[in-house]
Image (cartoon, rainbow, N blue to C red; front, side, top):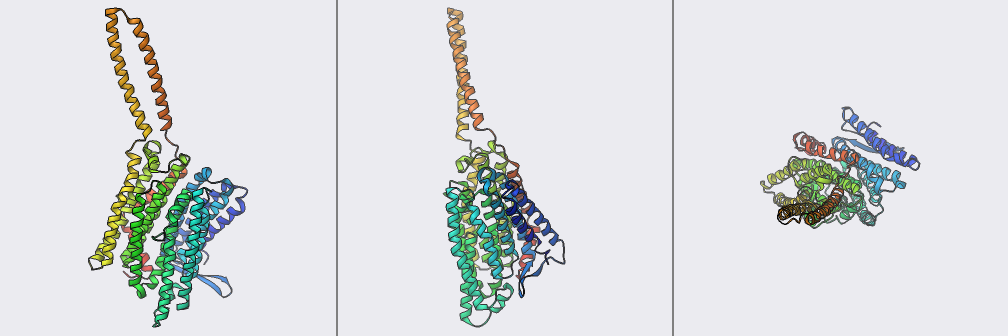
Length: 555
């Protein structure tokens, strides 16, 4: 029994160990967290390769007569891998990032909270009842509120406050929805609720629908779908970049896992209503996210708004409620974890090497000169987010669009509207993704341009001086005035040469390459390699369709 929950136990033990030892050995807190995640991944692999334990449910006894069921099916295993890999990327990047931007007094708390957040996500992935689902969501959300303010900057504290206040409200709404579902069905078990709510009592059905509506609103907040996105841009911009990567790359995915678990239960009873509700959320998210991303100057805030838009694409695939649509949505979720997690880590790498100076689009000019590795990685993430080959973002977006238009040809007007909006907003997104690539690779910084101009002016002046020397030498032969002009030219030559050297030294100092730490290169490389592998869809789509089947949706 315990081997099925061993990955969670390892993460919990690592977090507690950090709290017990971190106050004295703060420097090793990050390495304990790193070791805990690696060992947890190994134990999860052991579960996968044991057919007798995989895809099974275990009962965990909490007290006498009280227990909970914990599922380790394909959905749970796949998303636990995603949570742990994103967590691994975040912790590796944090090893360096915390040295400059996080006080060493809170190293132990920082890494422990990261692990507790990951633990909450893993609980959600295996939850089989609404109460465990709620506990897992809160276990992941509460550490995130604190982590957003870890840098103790004004923007970070404001973002954390907004995140916490909105989180409190929507957690209450979510719990209210769960209570209504329990009142109308008499059960919290996901596999029983769908059967119990099929009764003939219309009043109970209405209560159930209101409960589902409240639960979906609570999850829409967690995934930052418009119009419940107001916390996200400020929280993502104010948080440390590794924390933003954790929120965008893992926390959102947890909300989608919870949504899929709940939707599958109620689809037969409220298919049309839920489809319309999710379609509205998808359209608003695509429009709001892409349009507002256009107006941003801060790159991390642009990434926050683009993340809202990406949520819209995933919801569009879910909203049509076809087995392939849900499978492609799961595939998109996996791809998005690496796209967005990697992008925020790349932004954090640039903040680190520049002491917090590289924030806006203008600061990214000529990045290929100063931070070539990060420039390559960031370009890969932008291309994937925009849906350009050869990255997983292209395959995910194409698959969703194909399924939407296949359903549209079968007279599904909702699918047609979603497909058209997705194409239009995807075209809009090309501007702000392409703009960042343009600035990094094709626009020289102002200082560099000035340096080139100065060099040209120096060459022109040298030619002019040589012409004067020749002319003066001729006049010397004719008029014997060589001494005066020679002294004058030597003085000018010395002065110009000194000025040129000073300008050259200044230019080289300003555009000297940054030293890109391995702690950022490793997670960026993991994300880029994952996106290139995910570009080839068939094996991953097969896994996703198997997940859909395991949820009870027949192909």
